[in-house]
Length: 407
Image (cartoon, rainbow, N blue to C red; front, side, top):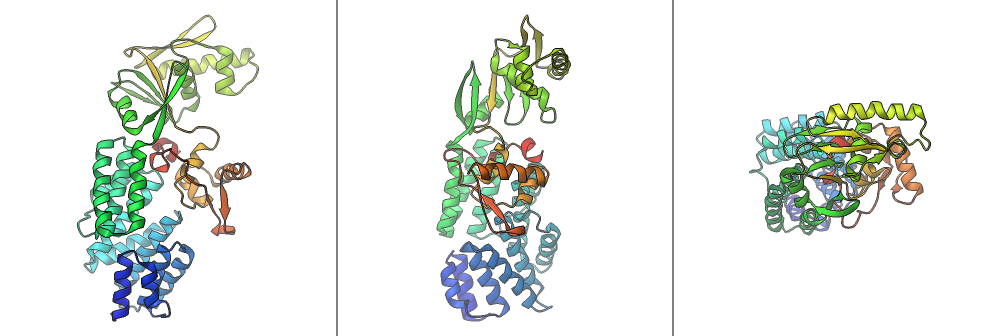
């Protein structure tokens, strides 16, 4: 490797993309193409970066399998940054195997890290955690150690383990400081801010107040109340959890009764809120009675649902109060907005994959949000991407509840 290539590689490792380009911008040999691609990625031109890396992979000879594999890993990272979640994972697996076979432990480990990070983005937290447990980060340079720690923190945040998240973020901060890359330091600082941002709303007695993540953790793990959790679509107390993510009607009933507790809710009001029918006739009330019966069965370990003269009321068995935990922002298409609020550019297919919904459903949501001026797009055709500025003061996709993400 000649001196210019070495100097450009060192500049990229230090986050100096322009310095790297000054050394290799006019060269078209394979190593220079690869370094130019990485530099363009650092500068934000992901389309150009992907093209350069593909040219580099083709330009490397048949005996340069390791160099080609490194190009594949770099392209996978660009695909993740551009939210191209349909990028073939098998290609990355093959590249990782090649790197491991040839003793390039650092880049092989980084390929595994990219796999874990993709799983985190699409909400497959259990699988991400399993793969992360088998990942050795010791070969990583400082910048990669910071990125690894951010993923550890991301999983801990989603698991509501705030102490573990703080430890991981402190590790990320130290590694980013060692790497001396301003953009990486800013990313760590942004992730740290999530710990102090409103993560949910607590609704009790008709009033709502914001909760930080640590307060949410304390509420769910240590509270003696019956909690109707609208973030994860479940009802829980200190002993048991009843998941209702796949039974939206029952959860809507539980939430309505929880918000009204200790009062009851009129039958017609439940029909309007849960089913959307403006006028309640006898058939609607019969449907309500059926669903209330199903709710009684589902909640039997935690609470009863009693009939009153005008409607129904929730009666916790062990808890002394009922609380409702709601997301910080609600409304139509809130899940799409939560993903877009990470500041990255998303394709409609990537949004559909992350939300576990059909692409047509997601496209309708995007069209509605675009008409309201809440999102904007750039590019055209398959290259079209959607984004929105982050919602100030609120947590973003890092904390999207797994049941919501996975559909």
